[in-house]
Length: 241
Image (cartoon, rainbow, N blue to C red; front, side):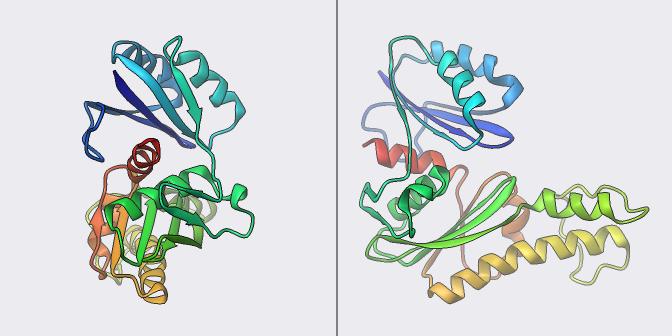
């Protein structure tokens, strides 16, 4: 029977199933849906021969209830939460329970993929989080900043006569010679700059970049890095072992 992993974020629900003993990230199925598409995901979950689910949810109580109703009947369910330690990772947050469960899962995943290294893990979604894990397995903290789309959208909404800029186009020159390119260059530079600053400050020997905006931010990074499709699901998988 398979393990169901769910990462419920502010805009999308990412999920995967893994067979017993599967390597981290070796999914039997994986998908992502909007909150409105949860019913379709539920149909797939019911067909997936699932015995257990582990769920990270940062999108509030209403979505949690919808997910609970959508899960296959009779399976064991864990609502993943940040604790003082799990899966070989010590949580160094001042109040461990206040660390977002998605950030804790991402840090567990980063440590699992880069054991024994000082690693920075950046998850680039609605918000961008940039967190640091030490070589001996301690989460020491991180940064939270508006995500790529929020940054660009804020400028486009709040500046007269600026069109909405869609993040994800081919990176423009650093010095844009038109307003659209200047905005995209600016928001990409802000995102990449935060990640690179974290890597330098931490003395990182590994950097993992994940999330929906990762394919757009990663190409402008100057620090060696690895793009992982969904580091939160990887962390949930490691935590479930």
